[in-house]
Length: 305
Length: 322
Image (cartoon, rainbow over all chains, first blue to last red; front, top):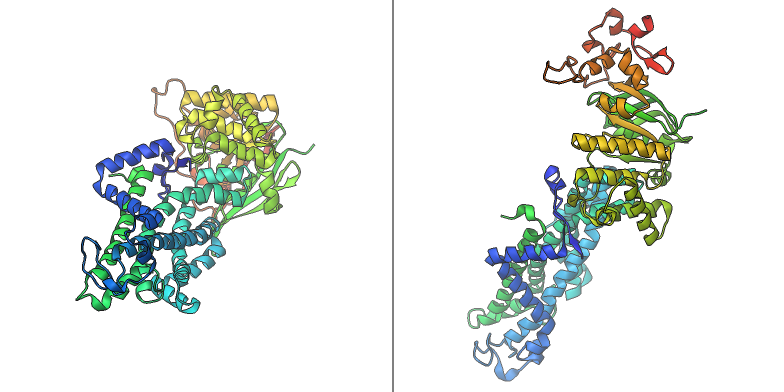
């Protein structure tokens, strides 16, 4: 990425003076937003922590083997202590190590889901919005069908068909997620369709696929990126819910939703088994949401407060 | 000899759900010889821009065009979509009104021009870049490398309009449609742009359809002019003919509305009324409701163009009566 476009979602004259800036000035603006907005700093910190845990998991976890799922019957259900900062679960596994190992799934699943949703939704939305007419009607009715079901319900049905596993949960969520991107990009494409530079491109004989990729999708990058970041958090939550219901990751995989589920029977006696993975989910979602806000402020200076 | 561009009985209708909602062009007839500069004049809503867009078949999806548009022997309205893509930008190109909006804000200007060159001329990246730079020099820009690498918002309107003219000429089209190319610019820059367009036209021999609402512009640069009113050509002729003996009352009205000398002396004269917004129901002469010389026949009879002098036609019953 060398440049970042201003958000062109809003039609009209304001967008015409939209500022495009080289990467350097984007970093400068990020610095400004971070100095001014402590929540943005928190968001960045949480995302960095999550990424660090995902990448460095095996090296920083205090009990790597237990993180992977090896039981230690000698230390079952121990409260948080110096040896096990966040306690141990019913199989004696260190909760902190499990959470750190779970970070990888917590990061990869949303990336997979949002990635697939973007890959499918963005081109369809761009074509629908740019072409309009019957094709638009058709594609939008299809998205309507998908949007008519609650995403989680749709994902549960898909998992029920595919069989429960982390990968299938991801695919199922992607099925439920792409229509949102199609809708988002369709709106952008519609507002771009009649913009003079798109007309000028047509007047110069630029082909339709090129107009779609170079002009329409390129100008939809910012809103899609912001939406995608916020969705990463939402997908963690949804994947957690699926795992909790036994439709996502399967034991002994270190999955946060699964851990909450495993600990739920003993919440009253051993609160730490469910609480800390739940807290991890909460912080990851919060982190992605705040990070999304940060991204929006940086990429779209017009919205800056 | 057949003309470079022939527009005959061009009608454009807007349709919504199978129903005609408006008929902005009601039978345009135009001829444009190779290397000629034709001015298209009229008030807002007369169909000037729509005529220009029709020549490139850039009409919105809801518009429906009938009649003939022949450019260099090619039937524009019958062209396939694929053919249209390789034809636009190559045989004909367009200069738009607001240069600031006509370039994509997220790419450098030169990059966008290179895309056009590569599409139509199939040059290598380096050759295309060279081609673009040459054309930026051709429109008398200095510091062309900087202009080529700049984003549209980093350049002034005048420079952008020059860059757009350069873009339009990249593939040496035979016709350039310029839709009010100077409206968004201040007066001194506008004059420079017009001079540039005129010089390039004479140097390279392409034809220009210059859409404008400014009769002064027509007089200073055009070879011929067509006055449009309510979706029809009401008078054509050389600028001298139109200025020295305007025949259609509408042309006279437009000339009367030009500021003369120091504009302070008197209030500008205007043509009373507005262009009719719904042309579906017009009977007789469309200008009749605003015409100072209107008489009974005007309300029922639709005037056909008559020749008043060599190369000077007017569509007015009074012209026919003389």
